[in-house]
Length: 351
Image (tube, rainbow, N blue to C red; front, side, top):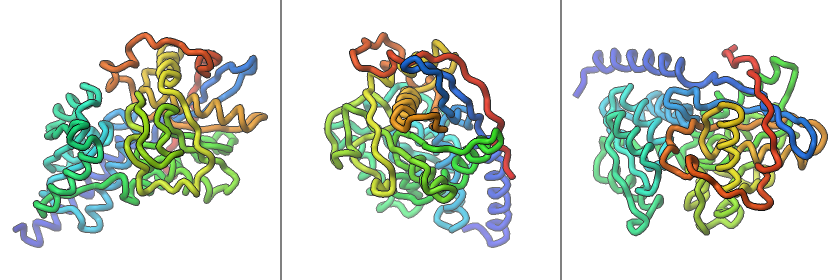
């Protein structure tokens, strides 16, 4: 057992460590993407979240959850962090957990990309893979809960139900977007993002609706597996990181605007175009988010300010369909979009 004085010294060091980590997480660049659709030149604004510590938006959530857990005494100095994840969150908890001195165990479905698994292992975390026969992603969550029930030294972030997940984006992503647009004389009219845990879209909803109740906040899901729309697991899709086997507890659909659907093939083609035509190496969900944003822009009419996020880079998808030739199908929106250019919007320095 640590003495009181040593525990106070440790907490002081941890506080300093969190401050250092926040220097590497958040305040990501925003870009203005210029594109042509149906003969008109238009703009979408996007946050480049691959500039975070481990290359994804999940760093915000993982860091905020752990910081709040420390402040509330929910995690002990030598607790083991155990979390069920589809990849990016696992990478974030592995990196940040190890930086804070914790052992980390990640449970994830065995069908996710090889790169996700290799990166988590490279960060010193242990991986437990769960097959579809053993319960799939819900099986990962159930197993994590069982592990915690049998070991009081385990801390479960529980990202799908933890309010800190939502708060992370309400306190960081939302204010950053507002300041960046305000710096060039703009305010958002709509925000679009795919739903994984739901933290991004709910946190953005809470912040943006507080600033202006008229702002639209749209959740996005794959056309092939519309779980948000139906409420249950149906079909499979290739946009890793969103729309798995259930609607997360922190997602309140009644407080959001209409759901946007995007085909996974269309998302892959769009992500490939973002890379080959703009030189931005992003993941499949980035392609989906941009397509959803173009759809919302078209639906709103006029010249609205539509904002989205590019959640991660393409480095975790090198063994997936993102690197293969995707057959263009009739009706795909990506075939009608010509990406012209992008330029940076001012950085989101803290006030």
